[in-house]
Amino acid sequence: MNRDLAADAALGNSQIHRFLILQKELDADDGELTRTRKVRRRHIAEKYAVLVDALYSDKTSCFIETQMRFEDGRTGTVSADLRIMEAKTYSVAAAREAA
Image (cartoon, rainbow, N blue to C red; front, top):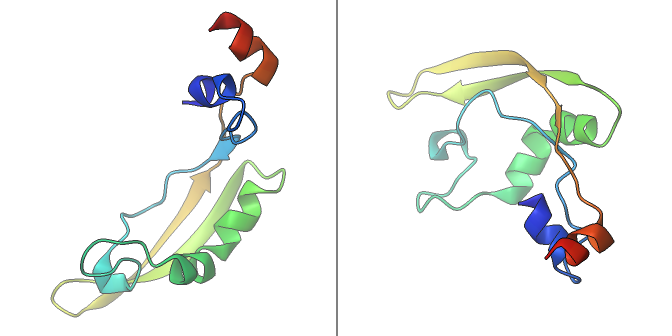
């Protein structure tokens, strides 16, 4: 994906640099999605602020503990130490020459 972005003059600087995989799927029961499966961005930004901050720091992992609601109404806590990974990025000029 980053190679394709680098080849586009307008999107070349929009490459993904760092990413992580959440410890659970986003769920409407937890208020993270609407019932039509759209992401509730404000809620996500608040709930996962520690992860967003870690992505923009030099950390290589980040601990998070979140509440989750099960379909039957029970609640529980999920915690994980998530690894932050570096994505391969491409030079915008080099990608254009290769295309």
